[in-house]
Length: 405
Ligand SMILES: Cc1cc2nc3c(=O)[nH]c(=O)nc-3n(C[C@H](O)[C@H](O)[C@H](O)COP(=O)(O)OP(=O)(O)OC[C@H]3O[C@@H](n4cnc5c(N)ncnc54)[C@H](O)[C@@H]3O)c2cc1C
Image (cartoon, rainbow, N blue to C red; front, top):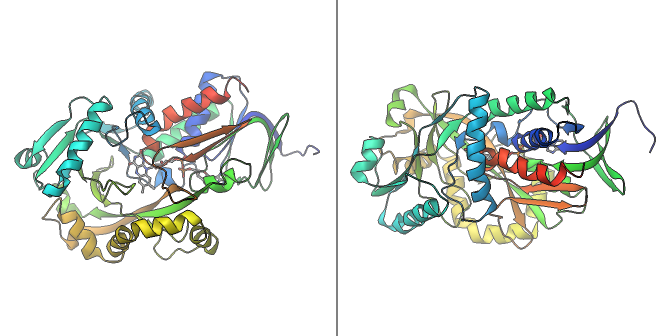
């Protein structure tokens, strides 16, 4: 291949300028500032997809199976995130959250969460009865609950902007509007091509979120996985109802479903969001109910694993669609936690689309999945709490690539 004026030579090229990609770039450069690094991002803004469309919660590590990558990286990433926010004056707050069981049937699952929190090393988790729930959240009703003091809030959009500045300050390039369309592995390196740049690098790390399977399929790494997109829609509380929620109120999650259930979140800007639900999206980057991509939807339907997911989760899925189409149904889910909430208290807010990897045999991957083969590393599954865990994930990947660069 002959060199063009727009060619770049680098030690490491990172595909995707979301929070995981930029945290990886930052960690690689911190570990070895001499490294020449290029980030390729297909949008005009960093963090344009999951990173700027999430709930803004700093997760504590309560939910995750002890010993899993999620548990390890969430706890590790939590500490690194707080330090990063303090050092860079990023607004954040550790306000704690309550997880609320609204029926006797949820008590066993609540106890399981408590045990997980303890096993994951969380201190200060308190079991609550109905009266104690109301002392923390006066409008919340439940038969029992947990108070998790470590949970916090932050704007991940602000965090990714600061990460970009840090990466640039090391002398790296962050190239916007550059979609990687082809990756070639060679004996002396990797070649990543966009529509107008060719980057030759010794190592490539892909952190492409909702497109991670497609980027992985440009190499040999992940033909056994497909991203299923699940849109999460939010409402916001009208100012007249904001007094009903102080901080964060979560239900006990369905153990068979990889999402946490609609909840209340005070955001760092003071608004209170309700949601997100989880409906199968017809477009990977479609934020409106009507968004449809023939390519995306047909790739979902044709995936063998999707049929099994559809068989296993059709009942839950129908409930989620019902809550998506009917505000009254969405409100009923919220009323289980805060009975005074009424339809008139809610106005539509944004939405986000989660990238959830699904195996060929229909397993929705619960844990983070990061694969390295030769000079190429793919982050194949980085759902929640990957924003919380991003700095830890970045350091783990930096350990893989910084030395061999
Ligand atoms: C509704 C919702 C709520 C959530 N709530 C929380 C929460 O409260 N707390 C938490 O910790 N986590 C939360 N998460 C999860 C968290 O947002 C994600 O795990 C995290 O943002 C993943 O970061 P990422 O960099 O992997 O993906 P993304 O932010 O999606 O970034 C991937 C980037 O890759 C780019 N890209 C894709 N393909 C290419 C290509 N071919 N070439 C170049 N660039 C490409 C994309 O444009 C994008 O910018 C939530 C997610 C959603 C959707």
